[in-house]
Image (tube, rainbow, N blue to C red; front, side, top):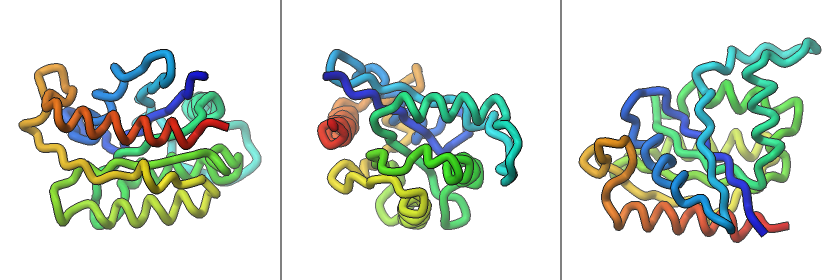
Length: 176
């Protein structure tokens, strides 16, 4: 049985180590795991509560989340928390219960001693939306700019193996 994992980078910066880490996992897709990178973060409008139709970018996000068996996040820390753009994306999932009971995990690629505020705020928000956090798949895997190849993917084999192990753990714990 194939497990479909939607990967969401919380970074909108070109050359992001967070996005590069997830791009390294796209090639991991195979018969058992289909991992796809969500690239629409910059298009998600500011969250506005109410009873109006979803903006097109939000409707597309909801479709991608509904099709996924699990979600893997990788987010930088800005001002001690997750970036506002990622928090905004997550706010859109509250009313529709898009992440409720969905297995989720995150990878923290920050250097040692950094990124804990992002992890803590991600844990809080994912708990609030009722996601099922797969603790064993949540990993700190430091990635430096030197680990990224010219294709904006992780070039370092040891780092790629650690990333793949986190994805495999999430997939293994997502089978219904």
